[in-house]
Length: 108
Image (cartoon, rainbow, N blue to C red):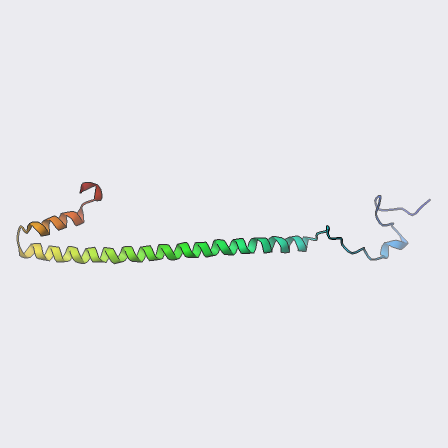
């Protein structure tokens, strides 16, 4: 009877079992290799997404600052017009400007 084997085509069990395993072939991938390949593939994609998100956040921040700038200007204009209209009762220009500042776009 021959030496028992673990499975057909595998190394025999027994005296020869202590030998070192043959080196991996190019088609053999270990879990570490797969994880490294996965990480190197995803890292640039994740980094690109993070950079795009940062650019979007910066653009949103710039728009918010611009909005705040114009809102402050409108408040200053409103205050100046109210002051002018209080000094001259019935000033048509001041009244018209105040109406424009307080109405919605669909009411123009």
